[in-house]
Length: 96
Image (cartoon, rainbow, N blue to C red; front, side):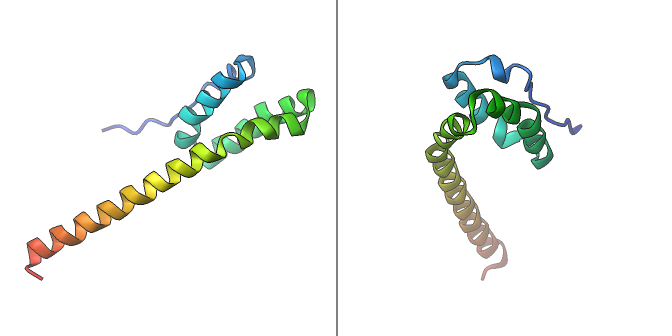
């Protein structure tokens, strides 16, 4: 399978409503590389902060934290479940 780098369409972001931006972040941030997130900040968020004020943009981004915390908890549980399945499979395969 060929690896294809993910490249979000950041040009549309500034023209979306607050709710559409929240959905955009939820859909795109998990798939973006660290470099893409930094680039997104400098290309999109920083100009919005200059136009609308840092506090307004920060308040909008802060609304994402409960969803992000839930995603982290779900991923941690998925990881724990996967580890448990691995241990069980290993015991089955090795007889230990």
